[in-house]
Length: 284
Image (cartoon, rainbow, N blue to C red):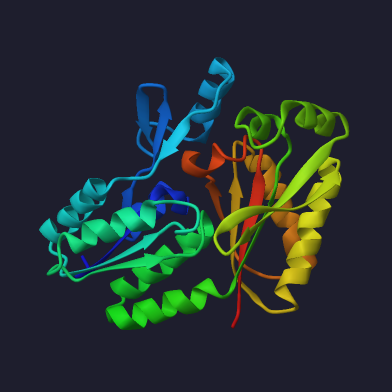
């Protein structure tokens, strides 16, 4: 087991097998339906989340892990023999996770803890964690790993599309009347991760055109650079995201095995079910 260990949060959208393979410790986001609280990746996933939402006809709230949650994670890896920790967190512009992790690190000043703002979310955060964990397992020094992560942050492109406005309306991010009209007109929002925020880039009509626009954005944003990593993210729509990957591969001509994963509840609650998205990592 490496002496330098990686910690992250569940907004990194990392599959359980990679968490285990690279000995990463994950701190869960809390999903709260009234008085009931569920830990992402432990007690709830995207499928269960939207079954509960549709059954109750309401959206839950989310809560970032507390400093105590991170302190427990730090204690765990130190007890397992670590002497240094890198904690890579969801973008500080959209969540209090980074702040909680930093507060916890300050509670243990002698433990060699460095907290990193990924400036991203989902697999754009997750790819940073994986890269750092691989480097740690290979024996890289902390500063070398931090430089690697900083470089990786500049080479990511993230786009996605929503098939329905239903959940935006439920969450109050769009008026129900406007959402109803949008559904009638088959309006499909295109999202982009901009400085760690999932922002509305544009709206197109029909799901077919939305998927085509995602391909166009991939071509435009990579500017002919070689694609080194591909992450395909979805919310209860694995078939849709696999089809999207095939289209991306044909359009960009890369030969890269994709990583398929769920968006995870801490993020998907803000977008809705059916989402398809991708993370592209290009060469420098």
